[in-house]
Image (cartoon, rainbow, N blue to C red):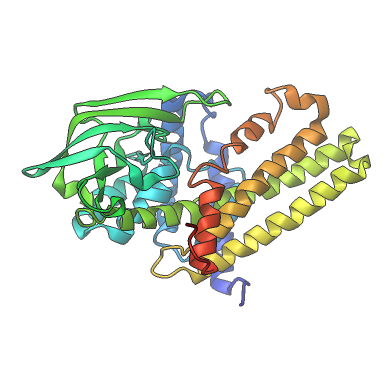
Length: 375
């Protein structure tokens, strides 16, 4: 497989690189990491700049290779990541683009690309995490609306979101996977209560959400009624297959900085530290090549099950990276004000987020290796 870049792709890279050089110095100061309304304004402001410069739709309208180049160059330049726009740009938006009607695409996609609207993810429930299909939030059809009652947890960016990609049970009589629907719920609808959840790192990007007879228009359903599990698999394919791609580039940058710190503070003299950093360098290079392979193999813009291979290995490699950072920092690893220490805490969630490692192993075993299901 040819993984080199064409002349046209390199021209795209040079144009983007030149624009970043001129755009980044004009950014306002970064907000407090715990100020989510401020972070939303900052992230959406950056998204608007990308839109005005013609780069906003690279996640959807560009070729897979252009997207990889975009992620490489923005990360290397230290540009803002998608932040509060994460769900809309990398989960819900691509799902609507792949599964939505023409009217739905026209209504929801441009505001996401312009940074006008932010989405959150309402999938997991207190008793439906890894076994997501056992969700119990119900939606009862009432004329041209669904009346939704239930609760969600780990709802990403709920406190600053305009829309929620919401999974509901529309039929409780059949098999659990066949009674689910995917809805776009306006977050200003009456009956929604959002309670932020504080993470180990002190941030509140997650929330629990309570829904008390919330009316959601039937026109906001993406896909057919009770076909939401299939649509959800499209969403999760994006979440596992491509949403973490930019973070691989970030991890490679952190690894280089970590090696520089080790040389300065003497940790480099420890052969075990050098071995760990060398192995991690090979690991992230391999993950980047796997990413290139995955996007080149994607059909109709939707990543395949190879995304589970990537997500499984990346989750553990990220944790190993920040464990190595703690070894390099030594006693300073206990100081949460030092670089990388909060990232180390957040890395603990990666083997759970977007499907646990156990779930990913099942997917790899059953859908890639063809092994029988356990009994």
